[in-house]
Image (cartoon, rainbow, N blue to C red; front, side, top):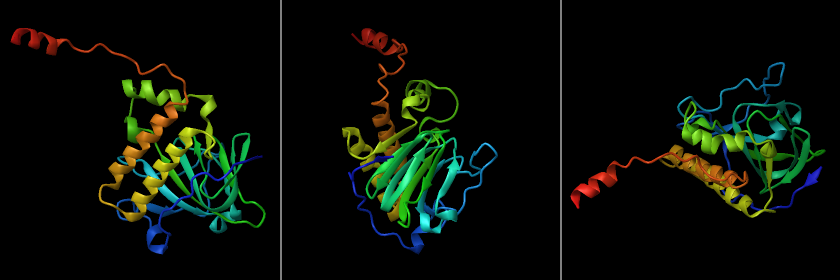
Length: 231
């Protein structure tokens, strides 16, 4: 097990019962279901968000979960976690990390993961689950080839512990905090603000892929022809 030091304590407002009602456009932060339903191959059976806005934000209290844990499962969505209170053992594939308040983790799509309690200690954390289509749309586009594939297809990025040991951690944690702050305050246009922060996070993730740069395509020369005619 890898212990992670505290890096970026979440400073958002305290949760209350009215913050955790389920309906995206009225209350964007949902209380996690007490149990996770999966298929035989541990694929989670749940739609996160909506087809036109595939983003969901959950508050997870292990003391309210079945067996006080989150069972092994995987899903097509990306997951960003930020610990609000306590500690827990976050397991991703064959890795295990003990995270505490203010720390987080990035979990790539189609990656097995689970959360287990530490003895009698409770843990409360936020989970942002989103489909990359909210950034890149559907189908194969120059954006998805250039910027989506290098992250989701990188075996070295199955998970990233966000504990402040690397500079880009703080940037991702700040954007997660900003997403939560906007959602908890139910600010007008929070969906757009959330999408902006997710794009910021994606750029930071891309910085860890070592890719040379985006796919280039030829720009039309029509504007130059027009300028020549004006001269």
